Length: 288
View 1 (cartoon, helix red, strand yellow):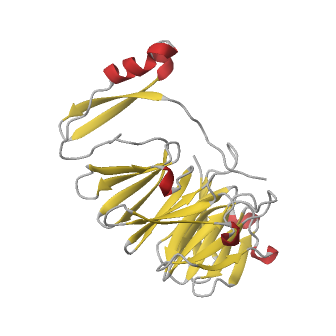
View 2 (cartoon, one colour):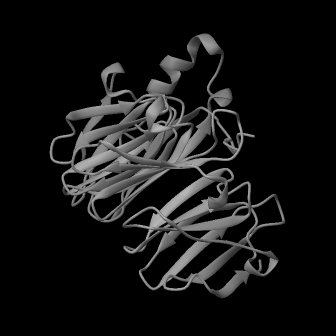
């Protein structure tokens, strides 16, 4: 079954308070603003734009349920799941370059974002598509979609070598999952990996260490390791000793793989460390 969910969704009013070297942003539920008919005007009057300062800044331009972030082309790219948009920020100043939206971009609950050289790649969860942008300008390159790509609630994306890898949360029948491999230079389909032996079960995160692709299976409490050069299965890692409990996020530092176990309340709350060269368990880190 589809495991995608939101922990919360709440409309808020934003106010800015400028301090020395720091911009603080406070959030107030719209229920505190007034009746529905006057919310918009009152929200406008409550918002106080924060001045640009040196140091740490919290920015709010164009953000609407920002859910994923990536670096590319000297910019920071933020996928706004609730706004069907992408916000581009300056990597050096945090200033807003542009907010990218519109039907032509194909954004539909953008859930994940990554970069590869000159391009930015956005996985659209409800659009069953991937949007490719120019990393230098934000201009649309193409929207990739269609049954042959196997996109089915694509909720994670990464790049490795000359390929883009997309984790599809479930198959069209509502179960399992798959990984779609694309050419990073053309966006052309390389293959869709979906055989049962891969152990995909609600894959929710994907990462690369250069030589391998690692997929966290949220529903299956497992991690699937693939060859980054061929997409071939290396192994499916599972078992109670690994501490996998709703593995929700995954990353690599080259030598190790780190898995965040979200689980159910009170049941996950841990991080599993694996060897990137062998997939062997290093340790399970847990505790309040």
